[in-house]
Amino acid sequence: MSPAAFLGRRRGGARWDWTDILSWVWLLAGLLLMLGPAAWLVLSSFKTPAALAEFPPTLLPYAQQTATIDGKPKGLFTVTLPDRQTRTMAELRRVGIVAQMVDPDQPEAPPVKVNIKDRQPLRQITFATGNYTEPFLKFDFWLYFRNSVFVTLMATALTLLTNSMAAFALSKYDFRARNSVLLVIVATLMVPLSVILVPLYSVVSAVGLLDNLWGVILPTIATPTGVFLLRQYMLTIPDELLEAARMDHASEWQIYWRIVLPLAAPALAVLAIFSVVWRWNDFLWPLVVLSSKQNYTLQIGLNTYAGELNVQWHFILAMTVAAMIPVVVVFVFLQRFITTGIAGTGLK
Image 1 (cartoon, rainbow, N blue to C red):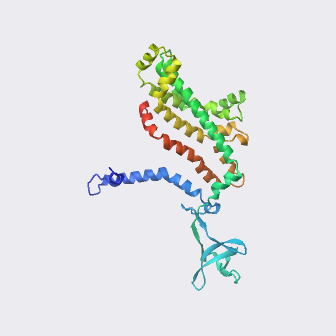
Image 2: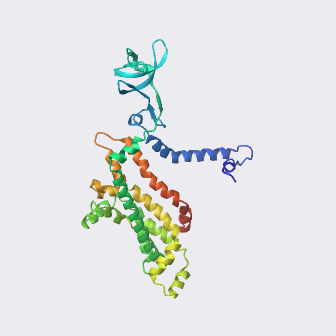
Image 3: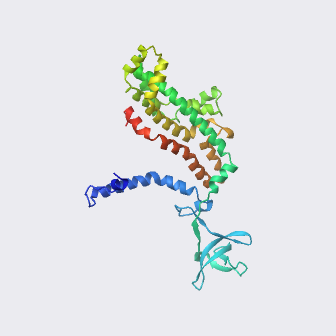
């Protein structure tokens, strides 16, 4: 069935049923709620600082047209003159509520004084691409980006290794207090980071990892969500397969590395996606641990665009969009594993 035929299906056949209308309204509202903020972010990242400060705000990146008068850019306006004629003029200066306007084709002509209520800015859609290029040239974006990539890759690799080993033990070995250990791990899901922030900081400080990227990576590699997700998936792997490997004199490490890990690939892909998103967007813990600018991750580096007296929103919005791209790319390439992986773990 073609996409157009699928979208055009109606319960009432040729006529619209009320459930068809309700379904479309519900789906369109959901689409607007989910993609609306992202679309606003992307479009706003191309706005100039003046356009971002406008009220009421606009969705599209409008910018005022300008003309060069005496070597300087002057804003263009649509002016309604006292004789009710409408002309396009450039504003030379403004004193109170009176603006001095001049015809951009005749800049040497005497200026015309008009009330600011009788002029409207002449605008057009303009994409301020400098919001993206200037941070790359004038700021340390690539340094922050490299630190974020290092933290994300190392944390994700160690998370997959440690969590899968814990899940393998909890799913395939029968030992005393196994269920109690699992219960304690799952219970930590309800403990937020802010509760353990001080003791975690003390531990990292005691081992000398403050202001070090490994101080950001190591405390986050053991996640209860990952252990539980992988353990539930590994329970579906037949024990007979492992017993057959033991009969062939395979070591426990070989069973884990050559049999269990390949079979748990869908669940590992899901955990990898989660870990990339968690570590890439992490802000609070890197903010606590890192103090040197050369160690900042991208999320902390974006905060440098906000000064005490001036916040460069146009750079923050543009770099936020740039920071989203790696996560979106990872999600696009691995999203097909999410449904199968989560369904295999029995999670809902």
